[in-house]
Image: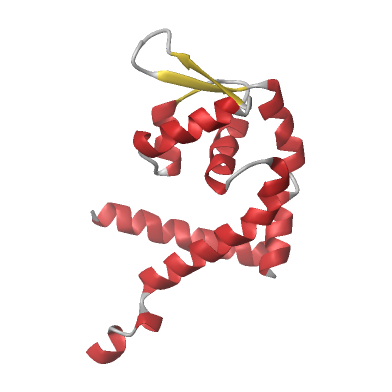
Length: 148
């Protein structure tokens, strides 16, 4: 591929990932609105639903979601105001916060269980296509992270 071709927007991997991410997030919006959730809040709850009933450290949530505490803290405060989570100081480290689900946050999991299927339907992708794409993206992420 020539330098001219390489510099075309349509040939940029970064732009395809960026535009794809924005489009997927837009597909989530009408699925999450009835649950009273934004996409980032949904991601936090996914992490907590995996770990339930155990509490999880804010730092761990940030690592799993690739979010810094400056982004995560206001998000967690909104989830707490919605009575979906509890934030408590860690017994072993007063500086750390532990996050756990409330009964309301736990029960929301049942309502959210249809979201992945509806998203695949809206994206017109089969389970096999989603799994293949996700695995390719995970490989890309690992390669980029190991490169530096």
